[in-house]
Image (tube, rainbow, N blue to C red; front, side, top):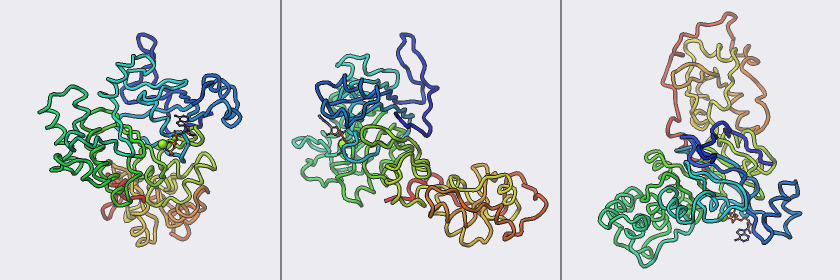
Length: 412
Ligand SMILES: Nc1ncnc2c1ncn2[C@@H]1O[C@H](COP(=O)(O)OP(=O)(O)OP(=O)(O)O)[C@@H](O)[C@H]1O
Ligand SMILES: [Mg+2]
């Protein structure tokens, strides 16, 4: 059973002219009921899994590395696959570009169903549509940095001067301008990983697969690479599937996260959703050490009942933007005895954030917020008549907002 939650939508699947599964323009990649079983009786194991037998019961027949995985990755999204060692992440990502054939299930990239195409077309797809960045760089030692970065273009048959020009540009983009003539052995680990990233970016494929791409780097360099990836993604609008076993990295990078456990995807959701509503004990154990204040936004914890909204819609209440990270709201909350008025992008009041709500969001992971503003009304001398909401919201001060820098709030 796949407990795929979050924003998983089924309505985008349409039947194409030849009865092939096609995905709509917002979806870059779709995986449906994918299985990978290593062993000679793999098809039989899939059947038995579908009949309800467990992975453990079937272990003598083969290793069920991926079991019934289904998800869709939206264009321009960073989709993180997260799980402990051996949970099936690498096996899953290798099936997405056909490096590993699936035992059962289907992958569709754009309009192309992987099972419908020849080996040659599959190779073309890897050159033109899906690049991969590997954990251990996989650079060619006898080639210069520039030639390594240009490799995918060479394979695509791009003529030398053009590919060198394009590779030089991406090297510049990943902070390696001027390093083109060096050889990989002259580079640090972080720099090698940048070359790996440059090589994948140079191919200008829409989809980028990254398998533990930053795991071999030391923490500071890793952090730098994470931030660079976020910047690149914003600028180039790639679709990125990023594998990690580090939840902080997953929370920092992921628009959505798929949690894998023993071959199965047990939850798909935004960092907020994973943190506030873990689907299983396994996921809950993962999230317990995460700094919640750097993942949760005001919107995800605010009180939004009509009474709360009405109360903070009075003139003079201090506004805060709904997408602000909690870590950025402590100071303004502490400076205000009254709850903050949470406003949306149009400065409309959408909720309230009192001290109690803020604290309970941080301290009590899965319980309901114990107090609402309504319960605290005496303390705040709630007026008996409804105040005027005054259209565009509240007076006073610029609302702080995490805005685009939300992810840069940093989780490490
Ligand atoms: N070629 C193979 N032959 C047999 N078993 C395999 C093969 N590749 C992977 N497995 C098994 O499949 C399971 C999932 O492995 P996989 O490499 O996908 O895990 P992972 O989540 O990427 O782990 P890690 O975080 O250590 O990279 C493991 O039990 C592994 O031993
Ligand atoms: Mg792996």
